[in-house]
Image (cartoon, rainbow, N blue to C red; front, top):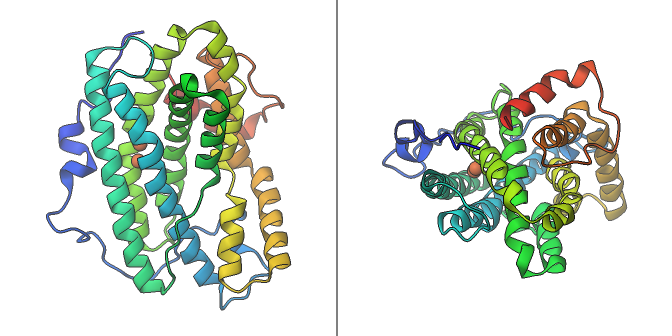
Length: 313
Ligand SMILES: [Fe+2]
Ligand SMILES: [Fe+2]
């Protein structure tokens, strides 16, 4: 496969290149929701009292920003560094190596924006920041540990492919929610603009390195795709539970609310389609031979399937 750099406009359009001279100068304040009222969000659950709902919403935003920082540092930047150092197994062109360094620049900047926004939200909402153990990252570590060092780098690469493919759509949806506070939307917008390039980068990288890996390695990794996508797309139950308990919700009520919302997230067509559309695109690309285990919905998912196919084509 010929690599076509998605970074041809990077010098002019990468958010890190457009950054204001003053750290935090992009933060303007103003009213608005901390996060969209997704039906699967615990902040939108009907049993939550109106007095603690904004506090829960701010804490969920802070948890998401903490996840962004950890994801960039512990996963995406490391994988980009592996490619930049030609440590990821496989042969790939010089331009892909150069672009991996650009990904590292972008991801460090996204983590910086997330930290600046976190401090701002903490001040405005009066909710303290917590460093969480996030399910997606913990599961990757668990799988890497079980597989041993020989495959750890490949597993991290697959996780990065999933994260970088799915995150763009999630950021785009949240950026366009007019009810969300403008600094939060600005963060989603900055991040989303860069991630469109990254998702094109990682989909090409996957198509270049995957066919070069031994058949035994590819077979061992195939069952991981559905798990990685599900871990990334579904809400993090442990984090949500911790947020509710910290806001004063009793332990059994918190567990029930989290469970209700998890069922709603599993049933939500957008989330389900993200999982299945990504799997279908991987199958079409010859990466994931097994494909989705369950039937893929028809009309409702067609647009999302096409958008994922474009991402991975
Ligand atoms: Fe990022
Ligand atoms: Fe990225």
